Amino acid sequence: MGAGHNHSPAETDGSRLIPRMIIAAAILAAFFVVELTTSLLINSIALLADAGHMLTDVVAVFMGLAAVTLARRGSSSPSRTYGWHRAEVFTAVANAGLLMGVALFILWEAIQRLRETPSIPGVPMIVVALAGLLANLVVALLLRSHSGQSLAVKGAYMEVVADSVGSLGVLIAGVVTVTTRWPYADVVVAVLVALWVLPRAISLARDALRILSESSPTHIDVEELRSALG
Image (spheres, rainbow, N blue to C red):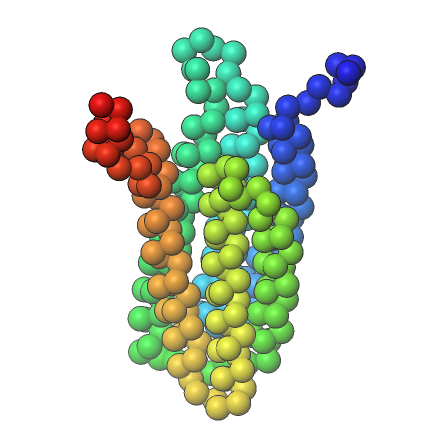
């Protein structure tokens, strides 16, 4: 076969992944602006929480894109035998930290909001939440097939999936607000979104730090392996 057809699987995967990540980042960035603007206009903390999570999605995809690009380059230095692949692990740690920060901020804001709950129109929440679900679905489909090949992509994919749950929560809050006029629906959903995000961020950070510390995989029993090797 000619040299022009000699592509490794990694190169093929990377050539498909990078354009998908660029499209995903563009969709998420555009919708972040929509969510943030709407949340400020109608004073919805649940929508603000989802916008904050959407921002971490944007950052995650951009950082994942940078990590994948660096990892594909490898390393020309003999002292860097692992190339740039560890950049993906550092990206996952950064994503996890950003997620935890957003979750804690929303929890704090929700507690403050309990003291004085403003009147929030439910219809804009419903419309934006439905659009958010659609945007997250498209991005999740773009990243899903590559989420098992890269820790950075996995982190971005997990955030998008979690954000879909947040958009669903905002949708429910909007419906409850419209039908019952219950003033705490917005705050309750904001807290639930934050509590949904927090443990997943901790799990992602734990996995990444385990790799950085070169610990054994969780599914391997070291003592059993030693006994088998004899």
